[in-house]
Image (cartoon, rainbow, N blue to C red):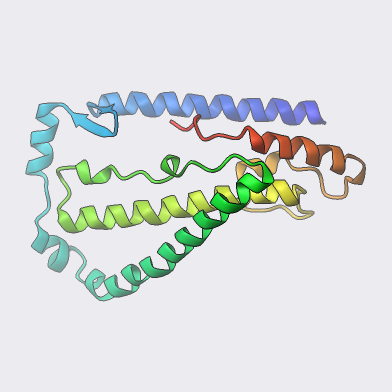
Length: 200
């Protein structure tokens, strides 16, 4: 059974690599490339983007004016998000070194590049940056909590779990008392070597 799981994990990794290569091909078709953190488009694409830019008036009052009504609710969520960010970051920076765990690299989860798209107006860019922050924070927090779970209780649930994080696949089987202690040592050791460098 462990061999089958290892084979499946290798297949998943191969599929992720294949997906990454396909996405890079798609980037080339759209004629942009990354130069550090900067996205560069061909000149003709950049000019087309400028022409296709939606006016601020149309975004606010024509396309979906009801978005203005819900804006205070959506942007009000920034307060709990920032508080969560502060607390989860404080937790990992203080506790992970004590546990001997590698810290989660923030930059791998927070990506702000949509402001470079010329076909977006200022409101659309602000919205995109806000969504990038919120989703980046959720992914960042999820990885911190996943590593914590792997350190303290790396046991699969008896019931199928939706939205399980990638580390969960390596957890011990529910009820496998014989292998729990040895697996716990191995999984804790893996956390010392964990890194986010594999993210493209």
